[in-house]
Image (cartoon, rainbow, N blue to C red; front, side, top):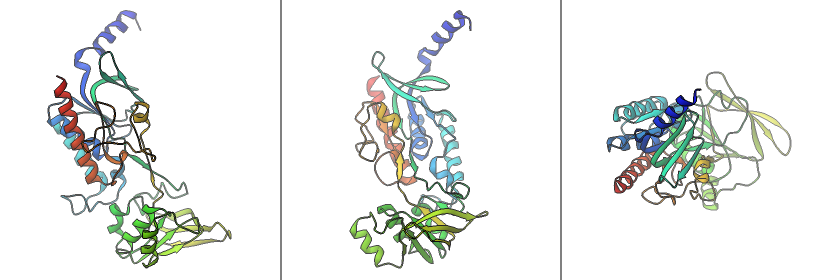
Length: 323
């Protein structure tokens, strides 16, 4: 490129018009709610998403616990939120991964690095969510949303009167099994060891329930055509293989918060990697806020939306207080 054009591009890029009030990283429910509130407050708002907007909710075959909808397919809810973000006036950058965030002390702005270039903003909301830990077996990816689920609270009612299995041995797995036993005809808890990691109080509730625990067992494959039909199992002590007919399987191995960007920026996290925030969604770094599954707390769409609204409100007050 001619150096004259390079210089002109740089001048245009660094113009005041390219400074955003609020940059939001992550296009799930928390990020979209933050974008709606930020734009409605009159902030020049930009929303980045590495994939397409929607987040984990988009993979759910049905949501029955989000206020306003007795039942809605996850992707449909995500599309409604996306349309509202557009109507509010926020700028959306899908398929745009933020590769790094740093603070420019000379301008007191945050610099967000993407393949589309560098974006500058007065404040940042991190809503990068959490990735469910996968089993990594055949059929898991293909049947996700078709009987494979990572959230009993979200999808459990869809399996009322059916046979389901929960995979895991911690608090989340036991809690989900106890929740499902009130809905399903039969619930199995599959655990690779001969004792659970869950709290003793939860274990007592489990053993007093009708949940059947399959000890020393792993899932080697999830089988089915359009829907889950059965699980291939293996006993890790005897090597014996078997098949278990179920209509659904809930994988409860925990989640890994996607907090790498935040950590590089100096944001504090807990021992699980979740971002630490106060009641106003503020992190320890001034001008940086966090919302949704990447922070500690209940991992639900309604909670994430609340986080996003609060984070945007706090960011608005911060930005306006500086002008």
